[in-house]
Each structure stands twice: as structure tokens, then as C-alpha cells.
Length: 211
Ligand SMILES: N[C@@H](CCC(=O)N[C@@H](CS)C(=O)NCC(=O)O)C(=O)O
Picture 1: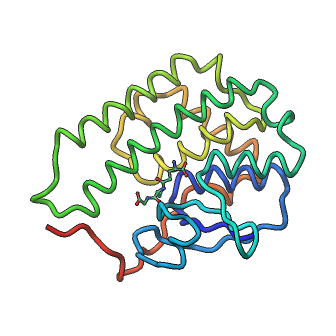
Picture 2: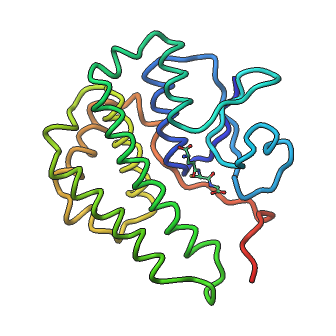
């Protein structure tokens, strides 16, 4: 199986953490930047988004929650990684929503020409991100722990994306509990290092938004 992802993608990082936690050896990762308009990738995922998991010559699955579920199911690890399934799925929804907001902010400033950027739009995403972080911090004891559970993998990999791309958000200074948890989780589970969000050169032939 082939996982199409990009080293900085928070959704791709979540899938990588699940692959590691499931000790799934049958998946290789190929870098694909979603802003490369590639018909063969669209044939796999008509939405053109990463991550996508090609499971055989004919079929790919997406999006990240479906891929994670597929991998956990295949490894027989659903109950081990999600002993409280509703909690896991709720944290995933919260974290994916923050990731949607953060990725949207990044796109707004990185891919959209300056004169077309909309600060109101950016601020709305910023509010979703910071409210989500406050919510997770407030419910910290209910939602997060030190073990290798799915909800922790979701939060951990997303926080690594913030650590990489959003050093200026209140995350490091205001969400102290979360930040401390993120650092401790990294130390406690070094086998998850390959799933941390990483910078990687962006191909120069990507399609940026035009006026
Ligand atoms: N709901 C999707 C979101 C995936 C997503 O937004 N991926 C970004 C990269 S981090 C992407 O492919 N963006 C390209 C686009 O929006 O066209 C999932 O969980 O997999």
C-alpha cells in the first residue's frame, strides 16, 4: 500500500502515527504536494487532497479519519487504540477542525496573492484554532492522557504541526498544559518521531492561486 502525503501535513502526520502504533509494515509513504495538479492523483482522490492511501491497483481511500480507521481495523487494534471510541472520535473531530482552520490560514498567507488575502477570513480561522486549543486545554483531563491512544495521536501530531508552522499562535505561551503534554508525550514515545510534522521543500511547479 502507498500513503500519499507531505511531511508537513497534519492529517498525514496523524495517519503516520497510527501506522507506527499499529506496527503496520505494508505501507510505504510517497511525498505528494496537493497543489500539484496531477491527473493520476485526482484519479485516486477526486478531491485532490492528501493524505490518500492506495490499497491496490484500483482503489485508494481517503480522508484521514477513514484511513486511520482502515489501518486500525486491519491491524485488529480498534479496541486497543480506542478503548473509549466516542471520546477518540470527538477529539479527532476537534483536532481535525483546528487543522482545517490552521491549514486554511497557511494557504491564505502562503498561496494567495497578497492583494486577494482577506483578513476577516483569516481571523475567523484563527478564532476557530484558538478556541479549539482553549477547549482542549480546558477539557485536558477528560480528553488527553499519556498512553498510546488514538485521541492522543491526533492531538500530538496536530500540535507538532503548530510547533512547526505557527510559532506565533498562543499555543506555546497560553496553552501551557497542552504544550507541556506535547513535549512529554514526545519524550515518552520516541517511536512516534517519524510522525512529527516536518518542513520540506515545496515543489516550484505547484499551482498557486492567481488573480
Ligand atoms: N478532511 C481531510 C483534510 C485533508 C486536507 O485538507 N489536506 C490538505 C493538506 S494538509 C490538502 O490536501 N489540501 C489541498 C486542498 O485543499 O486542495 C482529511 O482529514 O484527510
